[in-house]
Image (cartoon, rainbow, N blue to C red; front, side, top):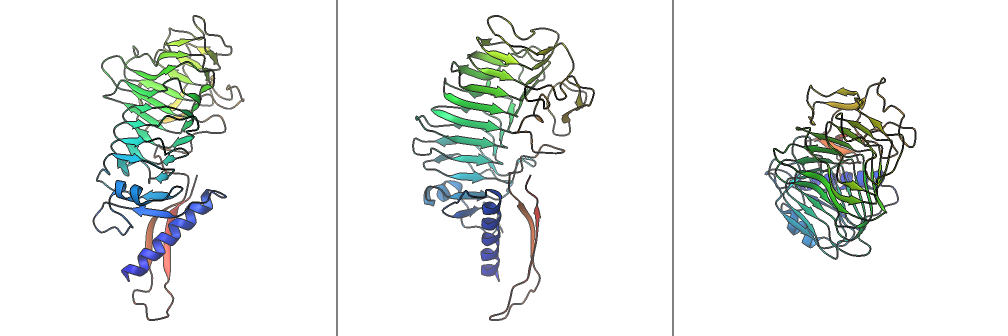
Length: 347
């Protein structure tokens, strides 16, 4: 019976991933769990990575046990079940020079993530929770729908003057007693920082350090300081802290909304992010339909809008099996196995 269940689980997960990603074809789907009693191909993430072929997908089962630190040395897609219960957690992720075109979805990264250098890096990081620092190198990186929780580390993203970078529809949450920055070290015109929300536990927090020439559009700076920008184009942002109106200095731009409350649906009476808050905009918000593309300013605007209707979970963009029962407990030779599968719909 155990062998039958293994085959069914792998077949269903493979079908779901291929259905969601359409024409994207993976060489194979690898399943992974380090929880006792789970049925998967591997129980160690680095071993699964080393055994995989370029182009494979590794599906990481929910687990209360951290999967440790890893190095990715080929093109791979890693998909976790989301971070809503601090599951599918990994300590540090290091991408080496052979890992171009890799993608991460639905992971809880408790430490740092470092991307490799190269002229054609092409990384996607989507719906991940990152507690440490994301360090970019190379070019062509898309970071969206992620939650950055800066507690012990000083910076959320170090761009390292990389080119063709899109940072969109993310939440940056700073809870540091000392000064810390969320985005730093960028001088390229091909950097787009758009439709993000910047929050902090202290109104003294500065969000940028040495960021020049970038496009800064449709963001919400809630009781934080959008300082650290130079020669940037800043448009249709909301700044709510009473100071540091945009644009300032040698920055240019228009249609910024200064010193006005963005009117989130529910801030829980705090200035920083909580999982029980609701960061949609009220109908009365000055940011409703006020973005460059006439959608909302903040994470629920633009084509890359935050995927959750309610709550903040990091569920990946494919159906997730959360229950599977074999209906006929005894299966004779050449008999059919009847299986009932319950899954979370992809959003």
